[in-house]
Amino acid sequence: MMYGRVILRSMPRRRTIPPGPYAAIGQRILQIRTCHKLTQEAFCTAIDTSQGALSDWERGNKRLGLDSAILIRKKFRVTLDWLYFGYPGGLDFEVMRQLNIPLTYK
Image (cartoon, rainbow, N blue to C red; front, side, top):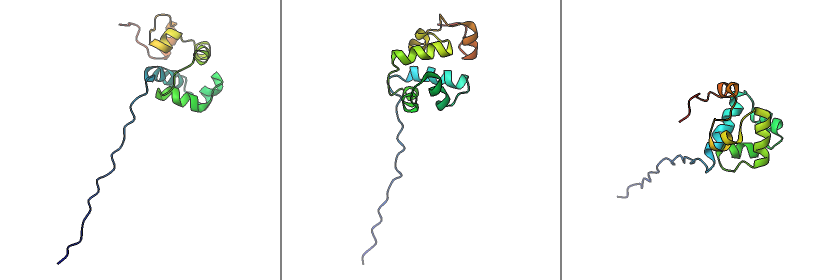
C-alpha cells in the first residue's frame, strides 16, 4: 500500500530589513518632513532633489550629501550639527518646538 507523500511547506519568513548605516540622519529628515506635513514629492520640490534620493536618505541607505544638507538647513532652519549628529544646541527655540525636540539635551 502506498501512501501519498505530504510535503509540508513552512510559511515564508518575513524578512525584516535592518536600518541602513545612516538611519539616524534619515529619521531626522523624516521628522522634518512630517513636522511640516509635506509629502515626499513636496519635500523634494522644496530642496530640488529626486524622490528616490529622499527615500534612500529616510531609510538610511544613502549618505546625505553636504549640498543637499545645506539646502535642508536653509529651507527648514535646522543646523547641520542637528541634521548629521542630533545635537540641538544651535537650533532656534521655535524650530525645536515644531520638531518636538526636548529643551534639555543629555
